[in-house]
Length: 461
Ligand code: PHE
Image (cartoon, protein in one colour):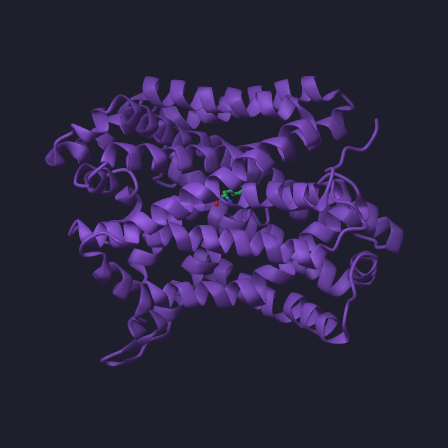
């Protein structure tokens, strides 16, 4: 079978940025900022990007580009070339954990996607503008308890994703990303400008410009490092989800990326777009919340409960609500297609079946996962593990364990075993200075493993 590939560097960058920019940026990042002191959280997040995520992204993409294989066999291909003994162990932790993480992520991502579609439809019909303030919470609550609405909405998203993926890498993934991403950024910028000029928005902007030292550990009673740890673990988990790092997606996209194109530049662009999207989301949501006098630390309900109220009180609110939920829809699709493509790529390689049959198999598998998650979350089925319904269980496992374990494996694999072929691969398309090699080596060997180890440790104790 001929190996598929992106047509250009920009095809790759936009597809990876499309995967990165999603509900994580628009829904999760702003509420975490609200909970962890605004600028303090943003600063910790940016440092994590520079010292942990940047080298890991280069590592993940170049593993894929060097091996030109799926996320499980890539470690074996490189390991066998190097004569490594325990390639299977690397494949297990780096590859199969990524598969499990992606499958869990797909299962609950379509559930959140179903809420997005619900609010999008409500904003089209105008019903969103009519819900009384005191009923907004109940509206969201009723939605989360309805199996049928969530299931049918999620199913629509699932089918759209499958159809796009049947189109393949160029006509499906790349074309969709190239069309949707510019549109996404236009909506982002227009909404950001509107929000920053709202009456009372200054307080929100002030919140974003001020460092709250408490979240860095400085309290009136002295220094408390656990507070910094809390901010650090929240920011690190967010960075993985936001960049789609440690899911095998970047590895697979890397295998479609031409050896001639500059990988550093591509990674810088992806990080830049993703961070812009996260910061723009914060600038859209936080000032609006302050201007409406709502609590900024209200958590996950911020996008679905607080924001509708903001739109209701805004002149032209109907249009703004429509634009905002459309933005969420587009961002969601470009993320689900990347998760899906990673699975299809693996199924095609392992079963030797064509793309269509593989898409069908993955669709059925994800449908099972999604149905179980929705049934458990809405209370139709009483499935609880560790006292959690399947939604919060999968969310917790993915953001705390699978992505971290995969990333730790990649850092150790490249840092200690495969530095040579990886640097060689990067050198084919870009100049690699000694300073970069040192930074890459030190971050992968020491900084990232310590950070990731800490995250795992905090999760276990
Ligand atoms: N990066 C996506 C977001 O921020 C989520 C995602 C995670 C997508 C993992 C793919 C894989 O919403």
